[in-house]
Length: 161
Image (tube, rainbow, N blue to C red; front, side, top):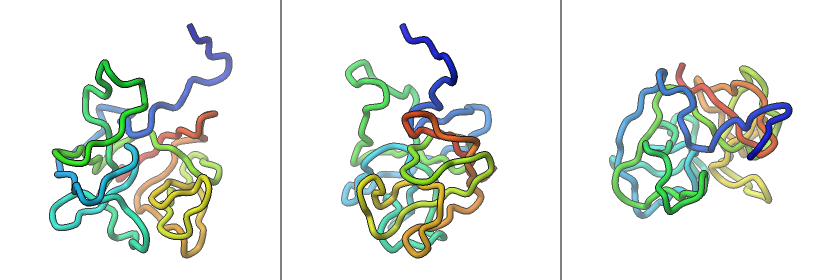
């Protein structure tokens, strides 16, 4: 049993956090460009979903890869699933979700950035950050943090709300 003395965890990266306020589209995964985790932004390439990556412009962002419902099977630990490489992907086009914060300090209504260059320890390409790194990150339009990250770096975002 776990007792939360100060604050409950923010959630699991890639989980929709407010079900009543979501718009999710189904787009096929691109098996040639797999996602490393749920809760990362994607782009459409030849009708398939690819992770936002090196050299992409902010206008390339299509939506956030979120976990399907039900979120976990009985064979995987909570929050440990890796996205499949083929089949349908659930893409959050509007709503609230939990993501993993890789750098910076998230704050209510703070801007959300995605790293597209100069990966380093703890700052992977495609990772979500709370501070601009000039040419190494892109601003996600209409996306803000809903507060600070929890002790594990999980934080809620609002996208296209």
